[in-house]
Structures are given as C-alpha cells and as structure tokens.
Image (cartoon, rainbow, N blue to C red; front, side):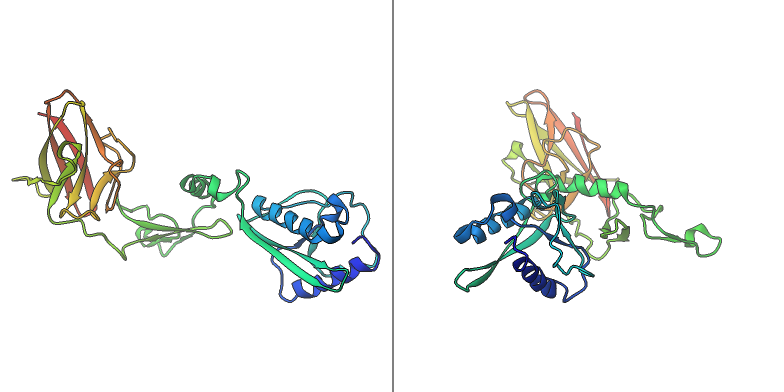
Length: 299
C-alpha cells in the first residue's frame, strides 16, 4: 500500500508463513502498485496479472522507483529479495501469489502456478535431447575408485571404458550437474525369432526374410523398385508392430545409421532405397544379441 504502517504488517504476516521451513532460495518480493499505483477495487486483480506474467516468463518482475525501504520493516534473518530489476529464476516452472485486503474487511490470497512458456529458456521451446547433451558436456569428470593395481578392477561413475557397442545405459544428472552412468540390463528387449521386411513396395505388409544358409544371424530378402523410383522399408520381428527395427531418422539413405528397436515406430522412420523402376535390391538384416546391421545391394 505504500503506507508506513500497512506495509510492515503485510510483510510481517507473510514472513511468518514463509519462514516456517528453511528456504533453499530467497523469497522474491515485488508489488504491482509500483507499476500502476493503487487500483482500489482493481488492485488485487492487477497484482494477480503480475503473478501470471512472472510464472509464464519464469522471472521475478521488478518494483519501480524503489530507492529506500520502510524502516519499520523487520527483515532480519529473513531470506528475501526486494527486486529493483528483473530476476531470472533458476528452474523452468514457478509459483507466485498475491494477498489483498479489502476496504470492507475481506481478505484474499490468489496464486499462479505455471512453467516458462514465453521465453527461449523454457524447456518447451528447446530440443530436450540437445539440452541434455549440453548439460552432459558441462558436467565435471566422473569419479574413479582405484581398487588395487589392476585397472580392470577400478570402478567409475561414468561410462565403462569397456562398454560394448549397442549396450544400454541409464544416465542420471543431478541438480549439481553430476552425471552417473548405470548399465541398463533390467529390461532387455526380445529381439525376435523370425524377421520380415515391410515398406511402400508391399503396402507395409510383412514379407518373410530367409535365414542365410551359412551365416548365423543373417536374414535376406528382396525389394523391387516401383514407378516412383524409391522405396521405404523397415524390418519387423515376428510380424509384431511392437518389434520394428528402423533408423533413427526419417527417410534414411545411410547404411551406417544407428538402428533403433525393436520398438513401435511410424512409417516415416524407415530406410530409403533410390533407383530405377524395376531394379531389384537384396536386403540383408543381421542380428546377434545387441549387434545389428542393415544393408541393401543392387542385384
């Protein structure tokens, strides 16, 4: 309210409430009255609009013209910050509240809870995978426990240097930026017993692949290019839509691309063969445990 008596009472009341438990971060204090003066009957609504602005930007909005604090404010030992400039909050979501005391004796408190939907700092406006990769790059080195002179017996919180290709790992990143790697062998996928090829050339109806006579784990099939000059294909295990092998990108022309699966996938995530209409290509799918490869060669 800007009064010598009213402000200490208001600040004292929320100090008692917000000091009930130890605070990890200081309480941010601001007022809409420094922006638009006292709105009388609309003062509470103006304050709530400022709350909405703060949570939607995940920022603390400043007070205007704050030069001197009321000497009657008892702030000793209370971790708070009266803003004179915009404060960027540490997290991607926030909550903020406003208390209003009506002229007729009605008291009210309103809160806004939300996440950052307005700025580029918001998680919704970022590529989650790229954001996580950046945090991994900034993480400190992994801890190493040296158990004796044999390096093979040493332990690390990072990626095991002996990890084999296609092995699965859980990566946890705590609030201090510390990364821990843990082998994920709890839920190994069922790779499948029989394999099929499906794609645009057969209207996505699985056609059986033939087991190679002499090479264990190798399955072979044929794809014929249609009039469009290109065909998409995926490998599917046991004709089960939950067991599709596919590249990690759409319309993939790279034979060395990483192979995802077995898992459910859309038809966009498929390998692409380009050629002349009528050309036939041999498809080779190799699978032994976690080791996978896909090849295609013109006949």
